[in-house]
Picture (cartoon, helix red, strand yellow):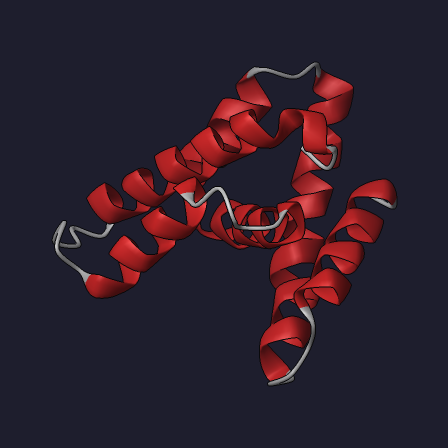
Length: 118
């Protein structure tokens, strides 16, 4: 996901994850926040870094996405996904949300570091 060659796949994953979350939490289709996120996922002007930030936040919320990723990977990578999920939820996202002006590039770098160290 981190490479721009995968950008179209990243966009599709984000759009599907937004829909998964909408269904899971029974959020109306007309919800303005979800519409903004859906627009961001398909906006050709959205930077790859912005899309990665969106993906990591959605990954934190979307159990369907996590399950799909787990099912697609061998056991060794499944453990890594589990460790990454714990670190993302317990440390990376709370730190990002606690600081109002944290640049998304720093958030993405922290997510990539968490993946590398999982």
